[in-house]
Length: 397
Image 1: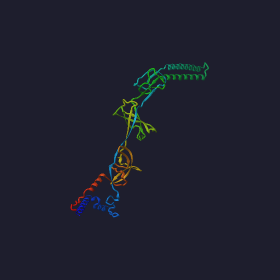
Image 2: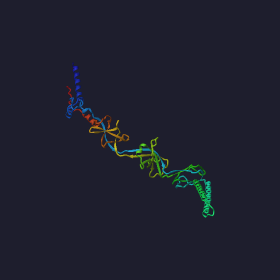
Image 3: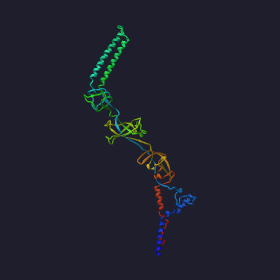
Image 4: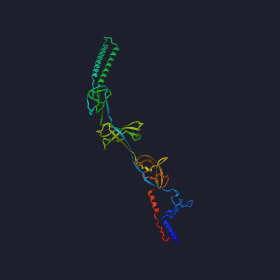
């Protein structure tokens, strides 16, 4: 019996200690009940304040613990990158208009020439002979026309108007033959079509050139452009006069400015790209036609609400965010305009400084109650703190 009594006393001591440590957590305190009773009155089922057993917010809605952040208004930049090619805006390929043997080279690669300046001359003896023959025929026809007109004017010999007209026609045909011979002779001299610098010459003395054979190129090295292609979504920002940055692998660390001068009217149906040309500005000394270039187009946008990507909630209606006001949240539909890393710019009825829910959006509903993590931790710490009026059970108990 003595052993049983000692065992019962031990169990009673353990129960007393547990009650002292955890009793206020297991049972609602009188202070909470009194507060609910005073603030909300008695519910129909007899529980104070109409709350859940053991206290809590009326209606059974617990405040969700979330993380919030204020809305910031910030500008953003749309950036498009493309690989392009440096091209001369004034560059003409020179070809032979006639076939023949190269008899004289009149320029060298790198020479600056004026428009219509001779570059090389083909053998032209045959054309010279044809021109002399045409001129002789023209002189004979002109003499015959002059005699007929003189006889017709004096009336000494009967000359009809038909004879005069035939003599005039013969003279005109002879003149055409002279013009054609002069043109054939002139085509034996290859001339520069524009002012510029001569490139490499694909001909040597004695070479026989066929008609339309490539000879050289004449270009203006001071006038360069960049041709590149951008995706069709860039059409909305493309316009003549827009500035782009041009970076060349051969000029590391140097950035050239270019201005858009031409935009294609069509989008390639296969690549879904649109062709663009931009005129290089400033000093382009040392740049060459055909260089590869990296083109960067940056378009600054107006300031818009910028929020973390985690704050976006998705539903059948689209994207939205939750704005917290006095402990409750409301859903605000938004349209995403731009995204960079974990930040998005949205279009919606958001004002700078609005508190939006960043973490915990998946457990929220319209009108739901929320609290911050810091507030929840403070309330938990206050509830679990030892009560000041608690008394430690004596050993005799």
